[in-house]
Length: 225
Image (cartoon, rainbow, N blue to C red; front, side):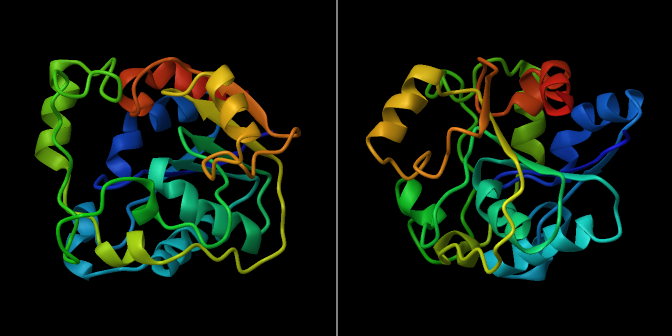
């Protein structure tokens, strides 16, 4: 069965970051759509988009497509969770992310930005951050440095609201977390994985936080599996 993968990037990056994965999915006979969220990438001039706008962006990309698989990386796990609750899809896959509970904000996940303005891109320094940037070669790091943009503050400050009752099958591809870490965090009720039920298929892809650049072929295979 031919599926349509709607690929949503995390903070600071446009749909372009999925290009190598999308190419492999299409070569295997599936469809692939890389989504650029409002206020990011080549849509950076669209202002301070909030989380609900990003949910709407994902729903718009999925609308009219057949056999949709929603894929959310990192921050995109938030709007993908809401979109999957509101529109019928075959399944949803979280890449180094998870189906976070209502009320969760991206702002709660790490150090707060210095202001309420657009959130600047992170430093792409593999020496300072070897675990998250593992597997990225010099070309990939230069691409991130060149193409990453600010990210709208409103989207990281607005709490998640599912706004629907649909509950499609879900999978999780863990890159910077091991299965043992995920099991322990689930048991402790950590919000990253508290909503990951026993029916969620978890696959490991040991690499850094951006597997679409460090391991695009393996990531494409796991998405199709």
